[in-house]
Image (cartoon, rainbow over all chains, first blue to last red; front, side, top):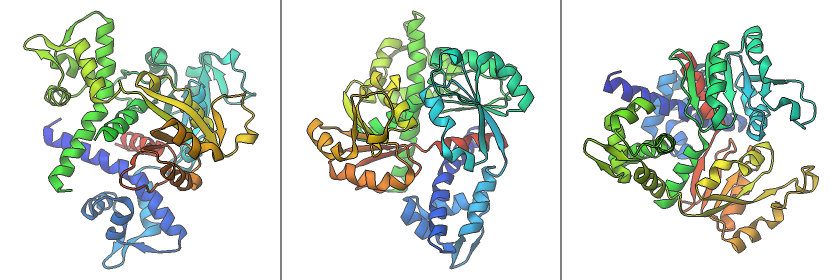
Length: 211
Length: 211
């Protein structure tokens, strides 16, 4: 990849990261009964510069009118379409510890078409949790993924097991891995990997506290 | 803030975000008994460009030798110092649901001097959880923060309560808020806020799947 392309891609990632915040604001505005919001007002609410907001919303193709601003309902639809949040995606979780359970029950995902249909745990037999219909032992993982056409897996196992689990998932034909384990996982180029390291958030928090 | 400063600050944020990954790699190399690693080798392992790695490690002041590369032990120390991970920070969690419990028990934080000493929950009286010594009802929050000099609070309450909780924390004198609730919180300028919205990760994952 050329340097300029890398830069563009990085810019795009930053724009995608801002989308959930736009969505939250637009939904709030929608709830208050307003039909339009201007980039200046969005800037005031989000803290982003108006020029950046215009660029972001142009990228997704948000509908707007001169002087009125962006159409609230239409922009919500447009952003959700851009993010593919109207397409249903079935996912599974590997590692049903506290974090796995928290993600399994996270309400926000279902709204975005992200449907976690099963969880797998190496310690399946010793889980004292109340009977959970969708919890399975690890030896059912590959079969389940193939049979149910699961596209995405969330990894919440301890770091020492993360690569082994990733290898199992890749072999079973998974398309994307969302990795919450603080381990660097290697996957083939055609598998999408998204790392969610909580200590990155802590690093940012600490560096902000320092400055 | 001038545009150039904003750009520099954003660059710095990206560098800080890469630090945990450098730390994981350097600790792995340390475990394998090697004393030095070159930027070319780091590039191979992390996927970052060597020039970016050099810039990042120059920023934190990592010790290196021509031809040998970076001193592994020394660089770990340097990065940890840069992130302030040798300074103890006492924190509390507000909202002891599944996510709150997961973070309360997350082993990775203690290693970084981030010590979660208490959790607070509005539903304290109905928590069926086994007795947890450090779980308190909400009306103890302000007193506890002041008495124990708590610098940072993690918010894991439902979005509808997030602003109320943030206001309570600010009033009690908290210095930093790490917000895991998908709500936009407003705090005074002297309070550090770090938002950790899980749907941002989902947005990135979806946009990568789409491309």
